[in-house]
Amino acid sequence: GVDRWVAMIGAYDMASGACCVVDIGTAATLDAVDATGQHLGGFIVPGPHMMVRSLHAGTSDLASHAAASGGGGGELFADNTRDGIERGCRVALAALVDRTQAELARRAGTMPRLLCAGGAMDDVLPYVLSPYERVPDLVLRGLARIARAGLEP
Image 1 (cartoon, helix red, strand yellow):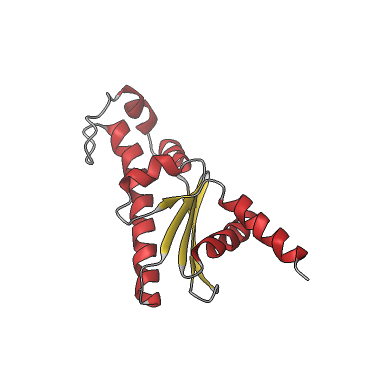
Image 2 (tube, rainbow, N blue to C red):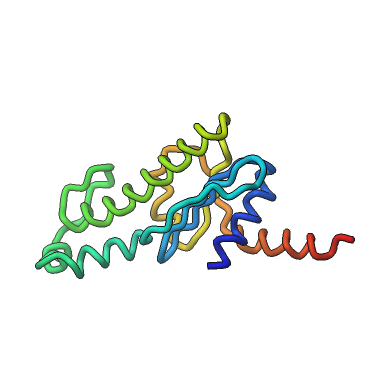
């Protein structure tokens, strides 16, 4: 939607150069913007909670086993079904963030800024290996940039 484009405007305005824009909510969007502000493309995938729900809904008896699983030990690898599902979905998204950032860095020839927003970012960012910045108001920053552009003579 339009919020994706507005977030990219806000991110590019902040970065003044190449940036990887990540918004993790119900869906997760990842977008690559080059040093000139050109959108190179990106991805739209289910967010972590939607991934978990799709596994529960689409896998026979999984929901009943997951509900009965105990809590994990806080390590990367899960030791029970519930944590395996939840952590697996979070790590999968984090890996996509890292892969997107690495590809943009390769194309840009420099390390772009990785700017992250969204209501579920706190579920995924602990698993991201790339340096990132939390910018929860990225869409509002984009709207402010658009408003400033409209006020210039």
